[in-house]
Length: 232
Ligand code: NDP
Image (cartoon, rainbow, N blue to C red; front, side):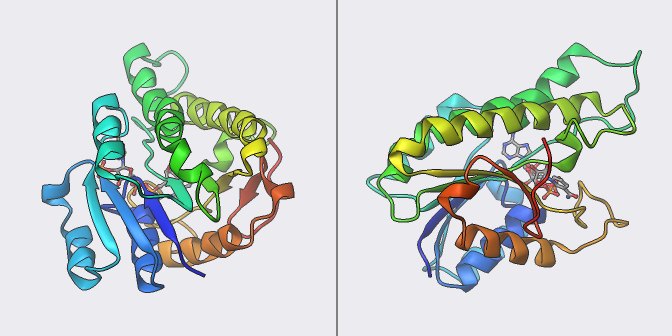
C-alpha cells in the first residue's frame, strides 16, 4: 500500500524516520521542516529519494506559512497527515516556577498548531483514499497515568491535544476521516534522550503498522505504538 503523506517536523527524530520509511516504501512524502537550510539529514533523504520526497518550509505556529503550504500543494490530496512536530519546553519546571509565556509556547506548538494545520488541509484529506490524520501525543498527557505530577507545560499540552483528537474524530467521521492519537513509546531522539527504551526505527515501524490497518472503530482512541489502548 502506498499513497501521499504530509509530515511535520521532519528534520530530526521521529519525523525524519517517518520520512525515510514512507519514501523507502514508495510513498509520496511532503516533508515539512522549520529550517530547511540546516536540515542536512532531510536534504540527504531528498537527494536519495528525489521522486518521493518533497520538502516544504513550515513553522506550524505561523498561519502565513500554513496558508503558503496549502497554496503550494495545488490540487494534491493527502491520504495521511502526521502531526508529528512537538516541543517539550524547558525541563524540570516545578510548581512555583511556571512561567506564562513559556507555557503558552508549548501549548501553541503541541495543541493549537496541529489543529490549525489539520483544519487548513482538511479538504485534501477528505478527498483522499485513506483519509487518516495522526497526532503524536504522549502518554504523559494521560490524566489517569499521572502518578508523579509536574511537567505542567508538556503534560497539559498533550492532554488538551487528546481532547482535540476526540472532537475531531467525531466531527470528521461523517467525511469518513479516521483520527488517532499515538504515543510513540519512549524513543531515543533529542526529546526522548539517550536513555530512552526504543529506537526511532522501531517506534515508527510499529506506528506505520498501526496506521496502515486503522479501522473506523479505532478512530478517536489513544494508542500506544504497540497497538494497546491508553486510558485518557
Ligand atoms: P524531537 O525533539 O527530536 O523533534 C521535534 C521536531 O519537532 C523537530 O523536527 C522540531 O524542529 C519540530 N518542531 C518543533 N517546533 C516546531 C514548530 N513550531 N514548527 C515546526 N516544527 C517544529 O522530538 P521527537 O521526534 O522525539 O518527537 C516527535 C513527536 O513525538 C513530538 O510530538 C513529541 O511530543 C512526541 N513524543 C516523543 C516521545 C519520545 O520519547 N521521543 C515520547 C512521547 C511523545 P526544529 O529542529 O526546528 O526544532
